[in-house]
Image (cartoon, rainbow, N blue to C red):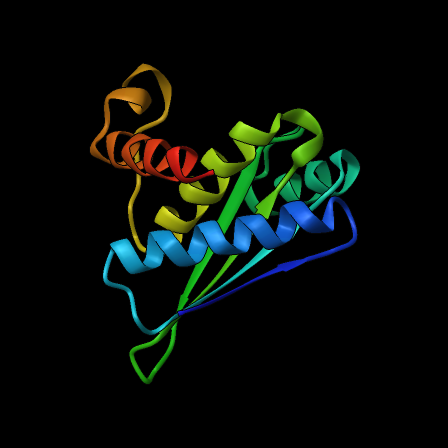
Length: 131
């Protein structure tokens, strides 16, 4: 499993989030996975959100999964750190990595009761205890 953090915004944070993605992948047993995490400023995330989802406004995380012919999985996770704090950055890295691995959740009120959300919160607790 490989994970990397990109862009100059909070580069130490990007390295930490890459470690988060590697841990989540290991806990999920995903051995043939590469996740690139990119931290975007508000304007860039707003543009990406519009292009990717057709929605106006900024969002906190967008994730893409690209299965490869050899069975490996490539993923891109985009996080907007300017709208969140450090603990929430860990949560968003976990959230995006789980999306890359194929997990999903409903929109609306059921989101925080979904199996993905419960798994996410379990991993966040484990990661924050280690910090």
